[in-house]
Amino acid sequence: MRDLLIVEQNNVIRYDDVSLSHLQETLDGSRGLFWLDIEQITDEDAAFLSEFKEFGVHPLSVKACREVSTRPYSAVFPGHLFIVLHVQESPDAPPAKLGFFLAPDYLVTVHATPLAFLQEVKDRIQRDAQLMRSTDQAVGLIMQTIADCQDPLVAEIAVEAMPPDQDLEARWIYDRQRRLNDMIHLVKPQCDIVHSLYAGEKLSLQADAVVQLQDAYQRFRNMADALTRTWEMLNDAAMAAQTKALRSIDASSRRMTFLVALLLPVLVIAVLLGIDDPVISNLATPAVVGIGLAVSLLVAIVLVLTARKR
Image (cartoon, rainbow, N blue to C red):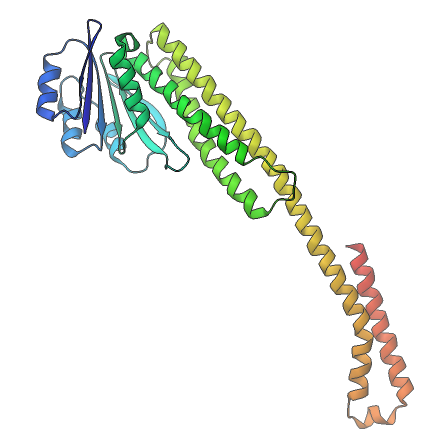
């Protein structure tokens, strides 16, 4: 599916689910800025992006959009900047990959699943053309909207991962740390890429877009810092839980050692008295018992001392 927004002379023209033939005809006759949003990119879409004179995007960037798994990154190609981000809209939804082709005259976004926050941005631009006076301003608005979506999600994950006062189970800690790690690996690349957009020399940005991107960067950074602090708190709790588990194991081994030490003399004497051997039978029973008792007591003392040292 393809949605198209064209901004001309402070007016917004929107086409939902436009065909490729209509798309090409419309862009050929347009002199304004436009944003093309592609959901579930097809072979025809890929060919159009590569061959249409207004785009001419690099084949590697088109390939990255079509791959199922792509790491977040940004790259400068002749005529456009390419960006890949991962975004999470809700706790239950898996992260969605979002590709950007950004040039002075156009913006193209590519994603595999519907993204509600993009529809929200398109609706806002349709109501107010001033929100897309430049394509980089549209990107800044998208980044701010992503931050709006993820702010409550990050807060929820951080609150759920706060160690309670009672003792924690290792499994509980592992599950919370895994969720925190997943979100940290999502937010930190967002933070780095947004920072590179306005702090580097990749683009000549409008002043409003710089302000938007700085705001989005600060919010992504705050998210990453909050998640990292919570992870560190959980890590301390994990160390405490591990120490407690080791102490419990040590106490159990000590109890077992004392039990063995107490039972060993009895076992040795019972074994010696039960041996049906002429040599043992010819010895005086008190001597057998005494030797066995002395040896077993010596071994028991060694076990007890070893347990106390641990």
